[in-house]
Image (cartoon, one colour):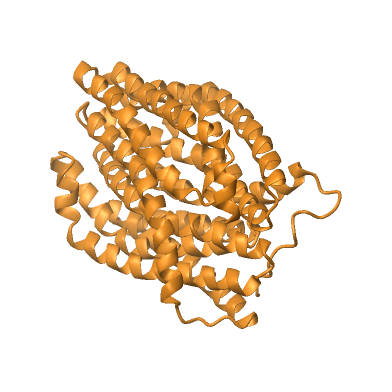
Length: 450
């Protein structure tokens, strides 16, 4: 069934809160699809053994870095489509989305081929050995087919978000999550494929989701008379904006990968616990990011319609919501932290270390809510260059903190506690400062209206 652009969010009498909720609530469900995939994989693989869980944790960190760098396919497509929609040009909006899909396909094929061939040397860079290294290579290599699908999902989701539709991605993500669990259980335990079965099951589920998005984008393009052939000018435009967003994401992933390097030196127990903590962090981050997605769509649309005043009001409302939601998730996480580990692993050592990491993570949730909302606002405004440069500043502030943890030689609960304090509190504080200073100015609104 063709997807129609959602009705304008500025209908008389509709409050700002309703506008935000209309996009943020379904976006929450769709955004947690990827971390839910990882949570399911971790729960299924975790009962195979500590080495399997540590191997999947290491491979997932690398894989998420690759996928994370490509998130610009959604983040550059959403504001481009939203601004065109705000200008009343639906055809232009769909053309921008089409070019984003083509770019996703080209990049996906190239990256998947390179990743399959280079799996062994890539994993070797992180110093893991023995069974952990073997399992990491297997999981990474057999996740490559799903990488292409994941990039297509990014682009397709970006199109629908820009059209102010976050409900359809929710339906697709929910179905994909269900398929992923069934396939992984069958392949890992039914067929005895171990971590390979988990990677293959997730890839198949991702391709099913990508197929749905491709059909939707095609039907909407045909319905509005937009050619399906790529516009190389449009692709270059997406690439130009995307290059700044990629640099911004590269700084984020560099921080995460540097953290993995430090925790790997603390031993396989801490590495396994860190994998679980980072997966939970990703889950909560995507949950908080629901407001950021609403920000991207709404801010892009309002600035496209030259309505900077409303964009400012929406920003203030979403900042309050982000910080408040962070308080709620932080309290809940702190309360359940001692029992979370039992869901993922029978190893008492991993459970104990994980509890410490989750308590620190819980303390940083209000800060994270503030950061994710402002990130979405500036992405929606097209302020990609500032985000990229600020990301480098944030990374420079974080690395000395991480180095101090590494040099301390701390391990066990103390080691992972200080590690997560540096990440969830120190690094997030740096991001909050750079984003907050930018949001206080008017420069980002001028860029978004251009």
